[in-house]
Length: 596
Image (cartoon, rainbow, N blue to C red; front, side):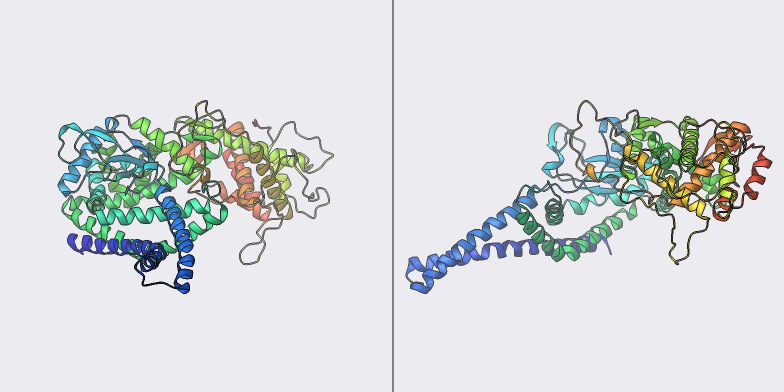
């Protein structure tokens, strides 16, 4: 599909959407038109008599009611605030080279330049219309976006905002970023067409009206009226959904065809970098950032971490070896005046979108650098988990040794965990205790927390592990739920920030992982206990692996073979593999540990 063919298809579908709008307006005006005809007939002496008089009295209030309802629905559709993606705004003075590159690209494509640039903490780029009055005043500029002429203020209300994925700026080179943005920027051409712009405004207004009518507190009318507005908006959306989708498909086809002539050869390489950046970004968020967010700390240089993660990937993976050779070229983040500040803002937004953290830093929500990550996140996480595990054992009345007659070792030890999980449940010396209630019973437990001892899998078979394993895992889940329920909320700043153009109450918008199961929590806590023992008795240190997250370093080397021993203890009650690993690493499980 060529440029003209794609644009023509988009325009025809836009006209179809507008026809649906016109038909809805015609339906709303039909009773009023009938009333006008009836009154005109009476004035001319044609429609007279008791029957026509009764028809006028019947149609007139119906027409008034329909007109009033239509006016209300039109008002809600017009005033409802369309959804806006959470982004970090980039002012032109903070990225003049980036704006210049985008304008040059628009000139080469012969399309209007975007009105502004923003960053999103994700691996995607798109155009977003923010011309609705609820999104704030439109930008003003001293320079014409297309000609570069100075001296005249011009409102740039037509061109959409260019949203760029922040990982692209740090991983991609300048030429690669330009090639990736070419088909996106080319979309400003079809977006400027009046019919397409009007159709998009109509669809966005309907979508916003549905959101308003279905959200309590946002619809100022009565519940019945709000339900009626939502029903009409949904009906119109269903009617124009297919036309709107095909319109956007035509716009995308026209933009892609127009961008073919710009950096075509480089676009192939750039698309490979898009996939690689996405893989590195996803791995960094789930393996590295998520543990920090759960600790109340947010890494302040996530985009820079993408470069480190992908560089490490190219070192390990033969298929990615050639990607590291590009790093000698100019990175796209050089187009920013202060890339560190932009990275920090994007990192905080990522923490809010993917984890739901506060908007401001505080004592329970502080930034952390990559240099501080091992001590501030990894070491603290392991010691907090180990301390929680021992608190739960204390609450269950578990002795420090299997034999209550044997004097307990002062302080928490790894041996206590090993002995308890390794003892068969039918041993008389240490029977499996019933699930007791941990401390802080007054704290509420979230309803969605699963504290059942017996866990069933999809195939109907119980998960591996003894009754002791299930009991301890359930108690850990309950304790962690109480801690989260009683955790102090982030203090609000002295000055309230302006209202955001997106619903802040629905965070996180994109949760990375579902809640951990009880067995996963137990595995994490036992692993943390082993790591604490390694640090306190064998001189091991906490470390950061760019692809796997927190890691234990013994003599400066990673220890990737810890997981099998921990799983053997939890699932089979067999401590032999883990004890063998501890002996080889020089770790003494009977020594007391330093916990938080």
